[in-house]
Image 1: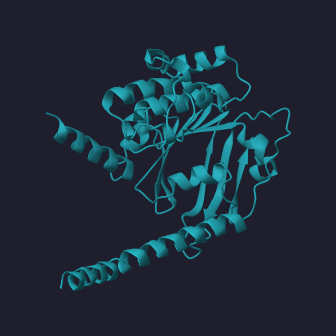
Image 2: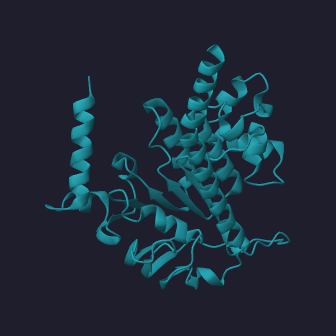
Length: 307
């Protein structure tokens, strides 16, 4: 009798696990398809033998740029978007989620090819630049910082592989990162863990900023770099970003509109089109403007959360 009950329970448990096994197989098949898509995709022409980087000034122009992702050809993410930003200026991109802000950054970095329109830097079509030389003029500080599972020193030095120890330390100082690094027992040799798990969000951001400072780019892209930080970390990171942006062309994607009040130009995107363009003061003065509406909405939320 006991053996029969054991057999029944065993069979029931096995049958009950079939659904989970099928789900695991489906996940594996999906992952395999994505891997094969990468393997079968076009390979970027990376030049590892380049000697000198062609330095750009950073004058950027988007001319009637339209774009859709290859996986969704029926949905245009950008629709004839045009704007210019001069060398050394700060351009802010704002708008609701899905309006095309991050897509503009991806196109500028040449992660995708345009379907129509033109993007130029210093009057030269970006597709005519050597890809390696082109990206050597750029640095990005994203919201979700990618750190490698090595030391702090190695992660900063990724911005300039032949950097000296003195250059790495100076970059950390400018990024407001030196103090917390120096507090660790192993200092710059501290292991950050996989994806920087041993560091806080603000610390990871400052390591990424130090990396960008060391690279010394002409064009800087900030993709919501302070949106997930607490107030004190945001202050330290924002101070470091302000130093980093000096003298560089900066493209800032922001949800917190308080961080872009001093931008030379603000582009307000909606449904893939440029809805408004101007300075903070100009856009705030528009009676029925989207920027003014977003500003008021954020102000009301902040006011309601104050204790």
